[in-house]
Image (cartoon, helix red, strand yellow):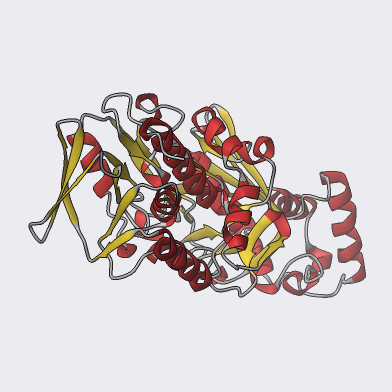
Length: 411
């Protein structure tokens, strides 16, 4: 009997790890990547620094999963963030852990991770085929056949689909895996953008580029609160972005009628805020209101808030009415925005939705087609920002590799 043959479609984080682990175990692995090099999406992860994982134990990690938490439990417990760190450290990559458990290469360059994966593939003996665009997959006897755009075909005993989702399609994530899944009889849960800017009904173009710290963003619909996140936020040209806005997007991307509420002073309750505002005003009674709140807000945001309150910035503080002061207080605690939509896939970090986890085992093998596996973003599983989605890719890839080794009798 010859070596066990495994074909892996997709040279991203999940595909590279699965291929490496299987080749190390003795399988004959071919990795098919349609781009000219592996890791196109890894290159832009973490704003080019590659947020590799979230350094938390499995239980805390799983709390940040938005979809697929139960499905991912086995994979994450078996290959947790600690294992990911160890894998790359053994490849000679020095890592650093920053605020919020975010793990990066010490070089602060994503190419460090891509180069490490390239070395791992080569050292393990993976046959890497770049520029290999897969056009179709099919079941052939007890194995699989993969058709490529150049007319060639690859036969294998096991097949791993690691093609990513639809986010950042310029990197090659164009939803091919969903087509392959459906061709093999699988269901695909509707895909929507996640970890993307929140496009608001109200214009915020005057605030573009303004970053805020220690604010709270809450999303609500008719049924109540959908999400509430504290931390850093950024005003974009069409809406709200930055860490907390991206995390909120993961909770509201399937909802309608969503209202956003931005608490600019979450550390102060209404009573304390009122006292603070009265103090600021009493010290600047003869000033324009447009200059009187500079200790509370950045200048651009102050003017924006006054406009939303219907107060002219040249209004003297000593002529501000109680009702106007109340309107300012209310907006400081709850600056409302209507959510028009979550930014499209072209601007989204990850895809929500994908191959139904109901049709997969905890080891990511198809319950419909034995020997077929789906790993990474192509699965209907996603999490908040901060390295969690990269870890999902690594954990599911390791689960699939381990399961193939078990079924094939490999070490």
